[in-house]
Amino acid sequence: MNITLQVWKQEGPDRAGRFATYQVDDIEPEMSFLEMLDILNERLVSQGDDPISFDHDCREGICGTCGVMIDGQAHGPQLGTATCQLHMRKFRDGDTITVEPWRAAGFPIVRDLVVDRTSFDRIIEAGGYITVDTGAAPDANLIPVPKDVAETAFDAAACIGCGACVAACPNGAANLFTAAKINHLNLLPQGQAERWARTEAMVEVMEEYFGSCTNHGECEKACPKEISIDFIAWMNRDYVKAKVKNRRLMGQKA
Image (cartoon, rainbow, N blue to C red; front, side, top):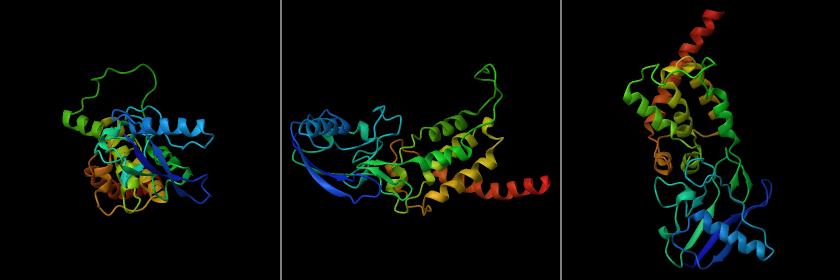
C-alpha cells in the first residue's frame, strides 16, 4: 500500500502548528496504524529529519496512551478500537489520511500528536479511591455483590482513560470518562464510604478543565471500549444527591 499522510506538526505548546505531508510507501495491510508511523519515523530519522511525536505504550488497546484523530474521527474509522489496534487494511491503497492530536482545551498540545492529559489525573486524585483495611487480602466472595451490579461496575471499569470521548465531544466534555471512573466504585459495596464525597469532588474538578455535556452522544460512539452514556445519567443523579447529603453532613459537624 502507498499512503499519503497529512500530519499535524507542532514543535511545542507555544509554537504555531501546521500540517506536513508525507508519502509512506510499501505498507502492509496487516500493519497497525502505529506500526505504519514507526516505519515513517525510521525513514525520517535515516534522512536526518525530525520524527513525528506520538503517544504509545502497551499497543494492546489496554493502557489508553495512544489516541489521535484520524480523518476527523477519534481513533479512526473502526468503532470500538483504539488507535494501536487499527490496522491499515481499513484504508485503501492511495488514500490520503489526515492525522491530528486530540483537540480540547483540557488537553493542551505538548508536541505534534502528543497532548497533556494531566487533567484526567486530577479528576482521579479528587476521589478515585476507596477506604479499605490494610492487611491480608480478604476472600473474594466475602462481600456478596449481585451479578448484574458486578457486571455493570466492570463495564464502567473498562474505561482506559484515552480521552477519545473528550476529543469527539463538540463541547470538549469529559463526562463519560468521569462517570465511568465514579460509577465503577459507586456501584460496589466497597465504594459506599466515599460515594457522596467522591461524586461531588470528581465532578467539580472535571468542570475546572472541561466543557459541559449536552447529550450529543459522540463520546459513546468514539469510545474504544463502547462505554454507555447511561453512566453519565447515573453520575448526574448522584451529584444532585451528593450536594444535599454533603451539605447535611457539614451541618451536623458544625
